[in-house]
Image (cartoon, rainbow, N blue to C red; front, side, top):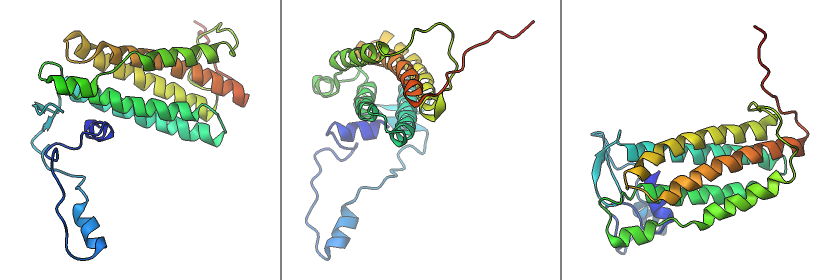
Length: 224
């Protein structure tokens, strides 16, 4: 995922920085085909991968664990967004914006502060603004929801259930990021964003169920 995050931030893939495509002879189709970068690089076949700062670390490193969890989160939100779009929910654009922000989250995670130069830090810094925006969205939806009087189980239709799943993945991503923040390797705002995002996804799941007229299942203590 961090490669995609780097591309989204305008930094390109490792080994391609500063590279200029030379002029190609022949047909436009051939030129386009030969210019296209390969998806596979073979650089990770030995069980190591690179951070944006150029470090080679084992793929089991907690940085790549956090990147993988963030990638899963974006995928889960993408699925929830498709279900929600089918129902005509207006918050789908917000989910797309969240996915874009998660690319920036990935860029920050992929740039460990212990090896980052000042230029790296400036390009991958993560501000408080997205956190405040999430809080505004949470407050807006919360005002429209009935009071929470019981423990809600993931349910309430496909849109709601998918948003609950996204919330659970978000919590895991946050648990992966917090140790990096505590070690001084990632921006604290990244962990704050994920923390607030899980709250947003919970509120949004309830809102989707309400708008679709679906019942939210609640926890019922089994009889002894």
